[in-house]
Image: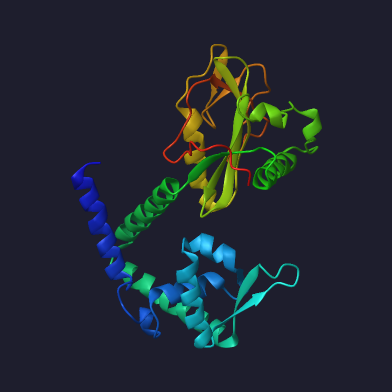
Length: 300
């Protein structure tokens, strides 16, 4: 990596951390550091599972426990075991914690406004557009793409969401049994593989590859979650396949830039998935991305 590029990223990080007050012991003048304030924000009024907080914030268990103990001592949160599974614990804000959350929301709005007020309307637009692009690229860089078993719980949830979205797009719904089948064994090594895209350990996209012969494979069950975070996964997960050439007899689909097999129904475009189930044929060769794992399939 170029040293000048590394230096620019570090300068940007220093500017942002100083400007938002991340270096202050009392973030937004509420008497606690940013880590505790962020934990209050992520817990929100409805509460959150401890495991979800750990994954979302990327914190190790020990540090998260120390943050929670501090907030408990301040009377801002409670940590409770769930009746169905005592190993699963849920964090909830107390009434004092909800008051702190409201204060942080108000002060965070004021901080954001302080960055925009000094600028002209044109400058604000440029800054917001740059922020959106930075957020998209940082999220894309954080995507982890891993080969998993297609019958794993996470894979089944993604495939079910894929079928649900197809059913919502077609006027008469969509019956998976009437489409082109993709048996699980055909998307399991060595016959093919199935990948999940994760952000913050949360599945946000999936796709399978089924081997046709030694040189050609078919992409199946290509799906990305509709929420904003998955817009980044669309670029990251599809990057594994986009680099490959379409096989002879296939055509390019302008809306999704997918090589659509001429044997299938035409793709009518859209975001997330095609409006018609599309099979994409690509050469069988090493397929990867920036963070594609080379480990054996993950059973989860």
